[in-house]
Image (cartoon, rainbow, N blue to C red; front, side, top):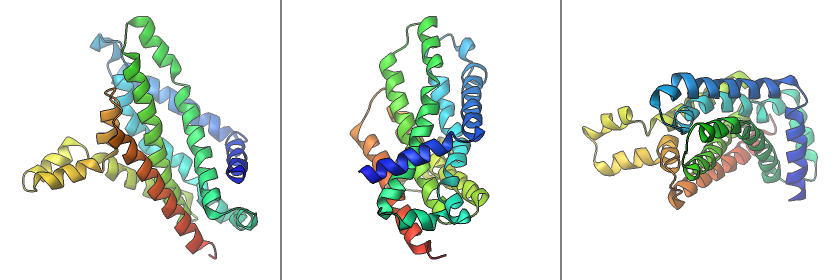
Length: 244
């Protein structure tokens, strides 16, 4: 556990060692506000809640989270520092977890800084804060799933741009799997069991369920298993490619 903490602190510090982290956070906050108040028709709706923010969040994640995850392992492999990291008295799993948790914490910081939106809706009205809190929990879990996929893809390539594009594509597929447009295309010919299985693979389906204020164990388990699977895959890919 101490080695995971060491890697975690090293990685988290590295995010704020350059202006890139601050630029990312500013872009995230600006886009969050724009989507909530303008594209989300916040004022026209006449309802004080954060539904517009959480509705647009998966699409924000689709581009901003891969921008964070693309450097997790690609940069290490390109610069050659991965060899140094793996010669330390640390297991592959500890290295993977340490880097992932640092990236997840960084996204969590950016998400926490959207708290003025929460304050705003409480000033303007009387929102269901339990639903908002549940939505934030779901948002953090969904970010972890995006990052875990990005970690695995980043481990497979030295090129950060390639890692970014492939992560966007993979996450887009998993978001769209729960989209009514996709599901309706299957409903016309596929059995309901297959349609439900496809919907069950979607980030959107599980996040939408949590954002209604109902934290179902199945939704939590989905995100936990998704994160665990892709991080395990990351460790395997790194082990296979460490000699490259």
